[in-house]
Amino acid sequence: MSRLNENLNEILEKINNSLSTSSYELDDITLVTVTKNATIEQIKEANELGLKDIGENKVQKALPQMNELEGLNINWHFIGHLQSNKVKYIIDKVHLIQSLDRHSLASEINNRAKNLARKIDTLVQVNIALEETKYGLAPDYVLNFVEEVLENYPFIRIRGLMTIAPFDEKPESLRPYFTRMRQLFEETGEKFDLKDDFNILSMGMSNDYQIALEEGSNMIRIGSSLFK
Ligand SMILES: *Cc1c(COP(=O)(O)O)cnc(C)c1O
Image (cartoon, rainbow, N blue to C red; front, side, top):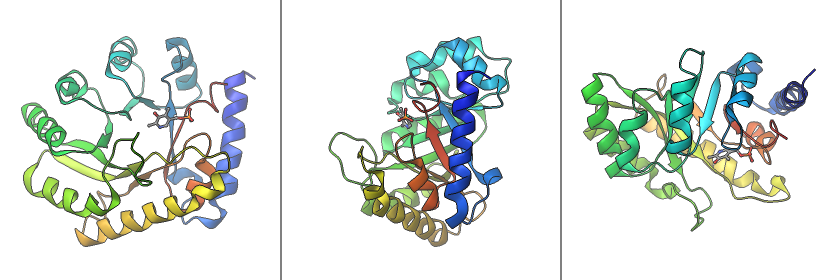
């Protein structure tokens, strides 16, 4: 068995263990393989192991890969800060933009999506710990922002929320942030009656995905634990 396969099995087992307190089952969880530090060969290997959700955080790395791997069964996730002037390069290739965090970006995505005559799936990124070094909306602004996107940008479909928790050697201490995210996720879905469309809560990375899953995440984004 390859190293990657071993790492994957270990992660799947941990995911399963973390779901004992969750309302989700393993099949409900999307594992996004984060390949920002991986080679194209490693992406192919991951894909052969059945990992079809692949996340990149930079357009200049993602784009050539998207082109080279075009025939493969891959859902590309964009998980990094997205400059408005780069939207045009990925809009027709991306499955889910996880970093919607401002009006100017929403406007650009909407215009490009309109040209393609299809809706683009997005997650609203939340800066749950109000870290200066991170992008995303402050939690208090999320409801307003979602309302404005729903009103003004008909070619954007908001599928849920995403957050990057602070790094902490003791991920247990991050639990309150994940709890708050889940509350915000539920509150948003209920307020705008978004039920079926609004069903993704993307939180949890290598360091903290077990806690995030225990608190109700259904999409985790894993890089270093897979490619170690
Ligand atoms: C790098 C990255 C990840 C994966 O982080 P690991 O600690 O390597 O698992 C997840 N989400 C985002 C937004 C990232 O930039």
